[in-house]
Image (cartoon, rainbow, N blue to C red; front, side):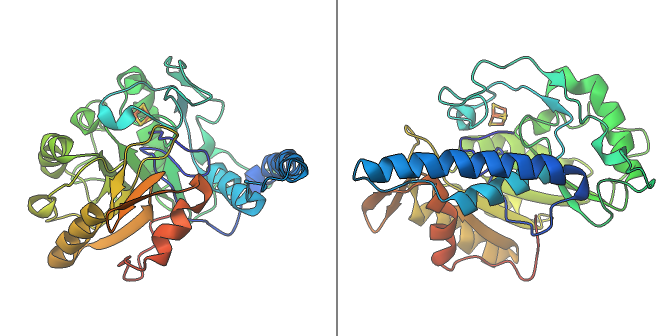
Length: 310
Ligand code: SF4
C-alpha cells in the first residue's frame, strides 16, 4: 500500500531499509534509472546553486531508494483510499504522480517470483526478503482472482520471504489457498493502522486469522495508539510519520508511548521515519523527506534485537 513519498515507501507509506545487493534481474533497469535520477537531480541542484540556493536532493539516498523499489514485487498496480491513513498516499494521493490511477490492473511482473535467468536460475534469489504489493494492496478486491495465483507462487518460492502489508486485513480470507492451514512459513504479514480507531477495527481481526508471522505498522501515525492489548503474537512494530506538503504532525510522545508498549510486550520496535512535520519537546520541525529516516534513527530508540525486517 502506498504512502506519500518516493524515497520511502507505502502503507505502506512505508519506508524500508536499504538492502545492499540489487538482484541480477533488475540490475540493468536499476542502473538506467539510477543514471537518469542522478543526472536529473545533479542538474536541478546545479540550477538551485546558480540561484544562490542549496541543492535539495541527496542523489545517493535517491539511488538507494531506487534499489529498494527494484527488490519489490508488484503483481498489480492501482489502489484507492480505504481510510484516513490513505489521504496523502504517496502513490495515489492528491500530490502523487499516480493520482487518479485507481484502476487495478496486473503488471508485467506478475510472475516475477517464478521468472528465471537463461541459466535456469530464479531471478529472485533464494533467501531474499521481497516486499510485496507496497504500491497497492495485496488484499484489494479487484485482485481477488489474481491473488489465488499469487499465493501459489508464494508457496512455490518457499525459499523466499514475502513481506506483505495491508490496510484491508478484513479481506484476508478471500481467495486464501485451501492448504493455508496455520499459514505459510515464508509469509510475514503486516497490518497497517494510523490511529486508535483503525487499530481497534483492524487488529482484533488481524489477530484472529491464522498467520504465522505478524507485524504491525503504525504508519502514517496520526495520533496516539494504545497497542498493548494487541501485541500478543506479534513479532514486530514499525512506526512512521506522514510525508508530504500537507502531512499531519507526528508527535514524538506518541512514538515513545508505542515503544514503551513494545518493551513491555517483548516486541521489537523500529521508528522508521519522522514524517514531514515532527513534534518534539513542543516544537514542530519540518523535515525533508530524504532526512526523515536518518533523523528517526539518530534518536536511537529502535529495539530490533538483531531482527531484519527488510
Ligand atoms: S491502501 Fe492504497 S490508497 Fe491507501 S495508502 Fe495503501 S496504496 Fe495508498
